[in-house]
Amino acid sequence: GDSVTQMEGPVTLSEEAFLTINCTYTATGYPSLFWYVQYPGEGLQLLLKATKADDKGSNKGFEATYRKETTSFHLEKGSVQVSDSAVYFCALSRTGGGADGLTFGKGTHLIIQP
Amino acid sequence: DTAVSQTPKYLVTQMGNDKSIKCEQNLGHDTMYWYKQDSKKFLKIMFSYNNKELIINETVPNRFSPKSPDKAHLNLHINSLELGDSAVYFCASSHLSGQGSYEQYFGPGTRLTVT
Image (cartoon, rainbow over all chains, first blue to last red; front, side, top):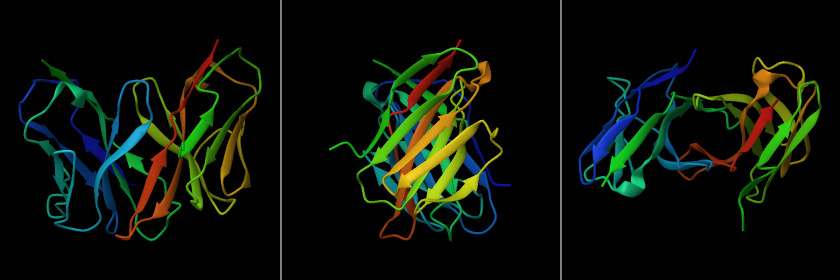
């Protein structure tokens, strides 16, 4: 079955550091890939997405590129802020059906220290 | 202007009780979902509905019964609650974006605690 693997946390960085959160996936066909962010006590928010190979999703300074050859979708940000502290989830959905649920990774807790 | 709303936000109840969680979306989406997030933050799909029709029913005890009275609502009823049902339950809805992918929008979650 489909699966998503992402680095375990917590990941602790200093403000303005460079961020990478690794994500790899296993899926049949050509899934769409997503990063969601969950701030404390809140629901999940879509951060960015990519729907085909070599697509780059970007939002709020975060970027991720859909790499089919390495089945990866790593999240990066050049300079993190304290307000980026949250749990980040990598996810995929199979194409061809809007009712397909998302398959999530286990989440990476990011802590940014001033 | 809330997109996906859930009630209640917190639910504390005793084992053996029956409870319901309500979800409403005002985005005009055709598909709605229920997810369960366990204590380790792991999220797993439980159900999905498309135009009021059940599409996905993952391996979930039959004590859980979703009901969709219309496209904008998807409620979750749980019978005979057990300690292991304690979790955060998220409702979501989706639409087909201009780039050909389905984007899911999540509600704020309902934290269920069974004592």
